[in-house]
Amino acid sequence: MSSNNIETIVAQKIAEKADNYEPFYIIDVQQVCQKYVQWQALLPMVKPHYAIKCNPNPTIIHALDVLGAGFDCASKDEIDRVMDMGVSAERIIFANPAKFESHIAHAKLRDVKKMTFDNEDELIKVARIFPEAQLVLRIITDDSQSMCKFSSKFGATMKDAKHLLKVAHEQGMKLHGVSFHVGSGATDASAFAKAINDARTIFQWAKEDYGYEMKLVDIGGGFQGVDGVPPTLRDVASHVVPALEAFPPGVQFISEPGRYFSAKSHTMAVRIHSRRVIRDDAGRPVKVLYYVNDGVYQSFNCIFFDHQTPEPSIVPDASRPDLLAGEKVPSTIFGPTCDSMDCICKDFPMPLLEVGHWLYFPNMGSYTTAAATRFNGFAGAVTCHYMWGSKLLEGFCDVEDAIKAPGSCCEPVLKIAAAPLVPAAAATPVASC
Image (cartoon, rainbow, N blue to C red; front, side, top):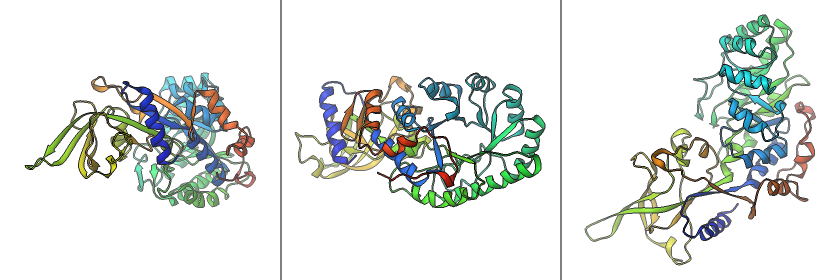
């Protein structure tokens, strides 16, 4: 959606709200679907399993469900969230290498068999509680070029992997495949190819030493969510596709993208409820402190937890057509709590704004609402308005109708949505919209 369109929609919603000054989201579901179409065009052999920890919004989950995506769940609650929306167990991977015993038992109850592990204790724990599980061995990767590194917490070394194959065989467990994660917001596309080659080595060890015929490679997440940020999905595909083609026929490939689908879909609007203007001796503003109704304890937790640097845009004000042309003043924007760390941005150049003006922040769809709190009694943005391009959607039925509408760019994807996972050689790419 263009900035002009989003400004129009945000302004429309502000006008409709009248004296309701709460922050809100505009969510463009079409963005999510276009991302799926792009994925299918560039990586048709890899079935994406949306990492719902990134943003568990039910409308996003529903849209991806309609398109045929799988889901990466890390807990009992996440499993229930997607299955209670009608997602079948075989479309879920329980991708947490360190699971509560009760959550393993719950996965067994709901017949979610695919689950990851990376150490002997976890393997024995799963064997005791859920011996029918289809185990996926998570290996360590080079995530040194990623925003959020996971190898310090998860992943078996290649040396440990050899030992774990032996223990899995001794325990009589079904070893289903290998997974890895190059880190969230990965900047080095070649890290995928290196990890895929390590996975292929483990496939060979498993077959030669213990007769395992593993059937799954999970290439994890780490895909960028905002256009133009390298590496692009095309960059990643140029490394991933040749590496996957080296696997034997019949191997299935999946992934765990989160921000890739959700980041660009959300635009957030906040209202300036207070300000403090600092002036020089001549009375000219030299710095302004603004206070808005969402902050780092709510949606902007992404600043701390996801290394994001949100930048504000000003919602045009019809009563002040010259507003944006005004002299820029270094401006700091604080959230609503009493904590001085509740700061969204510092010394950002903006014209002098009044209490009551609204700001909007694009690309706020990943790791924002998922970790929001009510610290100091402030809920932040809880209202969501759903769009398809520039059209307002009213609910789940509208989402599904928009996806399935004749001429929708999703049509080619829908034709294969119900198809089983296939090896690279048999996958059919679709045109990107």
